[in-house]
Image 1: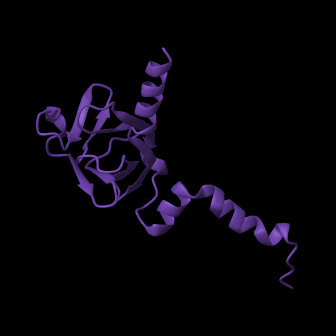
Image 2: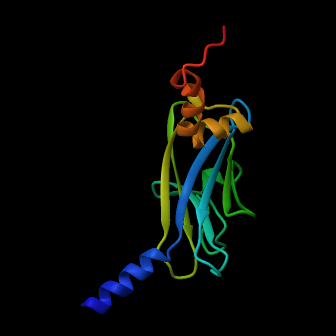
Length: 153
């Protein structure tokens, strides 16, 4: 039993994981979503896919078939730096769920889901990525003058 527990813990420690899922609008109707992931050293190239429940937006796995309505609307690519990007055309109004799935070889799939609300999307820029991924740092930097009682006048 002890050996089985050690093997299980080692498998979980060496598994891939999703670090961050960010999104922004390329224009009024198009979405860009970036899924940043970490892999164990010397692991093979992973497969990435974005889903909504059972519906497959797109994937880098040639053995899976994309859901028909998304063939001309969704494209997934893997970029250097362990980043899987989804470009999605004609985002519907309201809220939509997007799940990033990362898998390599015969390992367990790492997933992360985000709810995207079209009217709240920020345009793609360095500032919007900073707001989504570093909100704690941004809040600290903005409140630092108040905490240090800096007087500007």
